[in-house]
Image (cartoon, rainbow, N blue to C red; front, side, top):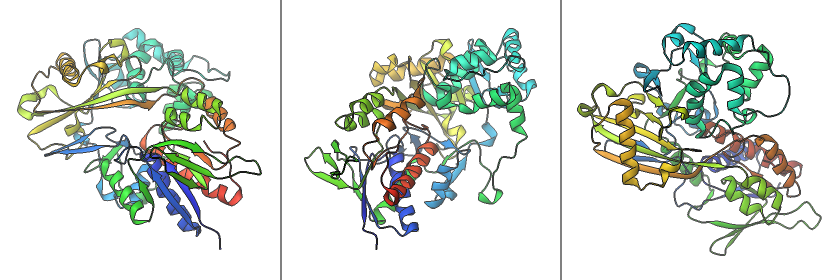
Length: 486
């Protein structure tokens, strides 16, 4: 009979929770005796996934949804018994806008990510000038770049569809996802699909048109149709609560509010010793494998005693700071100023507001029929000066932005500010190469694993996938001899 192995996971955000869940599930399926300890410095689990129930309002302090096209979050919800709680966006209010050249302009129907697949609505939208439209159409004739090497998102899209289309359409959509600067962001690490479309079809427009006719691969028996974004009826915090409950009932040792201050990882040398995690209170946790599901800058300090080069590479992954400001209004005070799902704001506009979501119109159950809930998003790379303001001045500035962009000048009946310092990892140029170098630097320490949003995807489904794959790697390596994994 195989001896029991112990795995310690540091970091109780969605990646750490998903890693622990997958490890328990996969070990049970394989008949392997594995015990687990999950440690987090915060007394609450879930990291940036935080749902507040304030009277009859459901407010997401962090992310408010996840992509349905990436299956890992929906699959996890099914395993947790949450499938019936998944909800789609409101099909009656599905318009989205861009604030451009002084007013809100609707993103046209048929816009797939950033490339129009239906020309009529796009031409009528007013998003681009006629010269901008002509330059965008030149994507059909501009030769594909065949040379290798990384390229920034800004460089790629300016090269393919022109400066105006990049600044007015691409940049605000990308900033809404990453809160980053497209001039610095790596195409290979963020949207490699676009490079592949260029190489295969010679044009983004041709590539997206061709992709429309490919089978989606969706199994109709897998569940009801889903909109692009989905969430949970009572908020994303439901997923965190279900994970923590399941882990606790499964015998996983949960250690919230315990800060890890040191790490000793066994080396590949004959006198290899053991892995040990040192906590702030002086106690230690020994383990056969350690998963660090912490932000890259925190992971850097934990691995620095092992390998200074790896620490510096991890520290070089920058993070953006952001804040969400939720505002509730009486419906009668809002009138017709609020419509659709919300809007994004191009960097070229020079505004403080990054985006706004009409939460109660985008999702059912976020507010009663008598109230309107709005969520504003500020901060990000190069737009974070606003975050230096205290809450009062910050809220007033957001209200001024809403008034000037939408005409909404009413006073909210409820305000909530949630700040996220160094919360969004940035995949800057050379990101994939850095990951390779980190893995090589930590090669002498089998049994040490890095996982999380800093590496292979920032969205909730990406983090769940990373945790699940890390769990599989831990179990494989128990059987075949430990290898490093990033």
